[in-house]
Image (cartoon, rainbow, N blue to C red; front, side, top):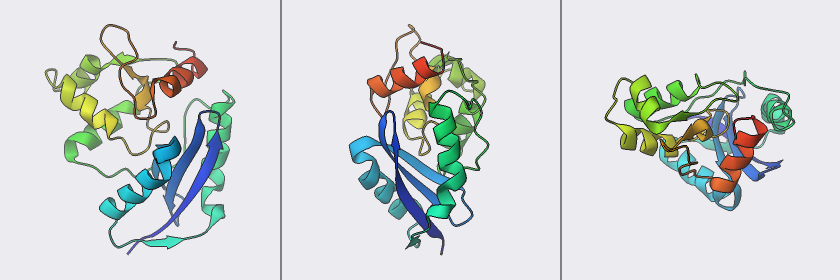
Length: 168
C-alpha cells in the first residue's frame, strides 16, 4: 500500500493537479479542468491500493521548482519522478527528458531516438499518455511539418510552454 497526497497548483497555464508519494516523488501532473478527475482516475488505475493522505509539505520542493520554471529561472527539474507505464511508454518518457529547454524535436525524430524509426504514431500515443507533463517535457515534441501537433493540455498551453522556453 502506498500513501499518496494530491494538491492543486495554480500556474500561469491554469490549475495543475499534482500527486506525490510521502517521500515527495512526483507521480502525476495533469492540466486544468480535467486535472483533478484525471489524476484520481490515474491513481486508482495505477495504484489501486493507495491511501490518500494530506500533507502539503510533500509538495514544497515540487512547487518551488514549478514556480521557478514558470518564471523562466529553472531549465532542468531536479525533483524525483516516478511515472508508471508500459516498457515502450517508459522508454519514450525517458527519452523526453533528454530534450533540452529551448529545443523541440518531431515525433519522427523521437521514434528514431527510441530505436523504432517507423513508430511515430506509437511514440505520439505514448507521449500523449505521459502522466507527468511539463517535468517530463512532452510539450517539446512537435509535428514533422513544424506545427505544434497535439497536446493533452491543449495547443494554447503547449504554445505558452514553448514560448516560455524560447522555442516558439
